[in-house]
Length: 112
Image (cartoon, rainbow, N blue to C red; front, top):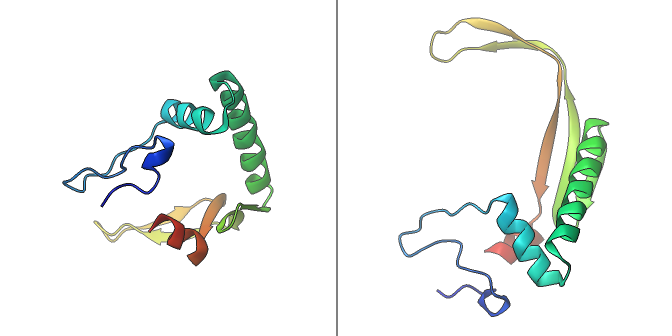
């Protein structure tokens, strides 16, 4: 099946053997700058700013909704206990902030 975004210069995400390919930061910046017409330096600054704002918002427990179908939400996890599945030993866990990422069916249908 051809990649539906091939007309925009995107490569197939999966090769014929269905092996996963990971896009690194430099590749993301290059692809986004090509798609938007901005320079790679501008895209780097924009991505850095986006990361800073997202991390700060999630750290504060806020929910950040992106485009249609993707949201990030910070959630506080209190300290508690967990069990090591290998040894069965009970260990204490520290309180921490975690991030939940939610994908709606709208987004899932776009990438299917």
